[in-house]
Image 1 (tube, rainbow, N blue to C red):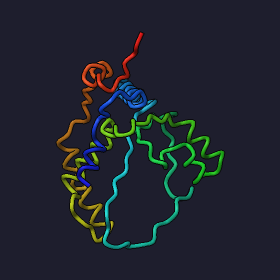
Image 2 (cartoon, rainbow, N blue to C red):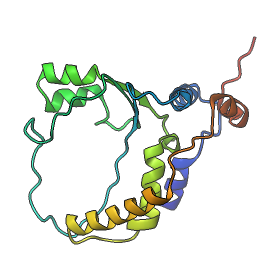
Image 3 (tube, rainbow, N blue to C red):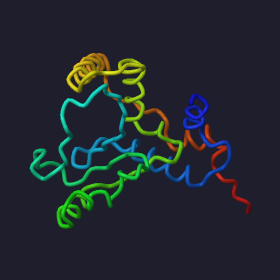
Length: 183
């Protein structure tokens, strides 16, 4: 498992145009000034093992969740998991609702083996190391209690994300992943 995990986090050892294209797209999103009309959301998932289910999960429906009026569009930074697609909306919503939601989302995918570019992935990695690593939780309430305590502490001490890497930095520091153009 350790070797596989290390391999997952490694930057490609050779030139990879697809990696570069997705990396630069994410970096470009992070370079933009904050715009409340088009906020950037970063999404990732974290598997946590529970010892038992306390109740049967409910399927998602239009009745679950509150519809809130907000911004007209969001930029969503996420990985290429099969549920992080436009098609996934059509699997849980009627076509009209799916289309109306999709119009409001601009997907920005991290490159394969480039989840380190997703701020949510970095936060979940910290959560795992500092709060849930090598633990099992008997129920959702205990898991929620522990993660909320961790989140409260982090929120009180952290001033936000100060993303340092820019596209020009990547072109210099990660030169090996850029394809060589022969003229």
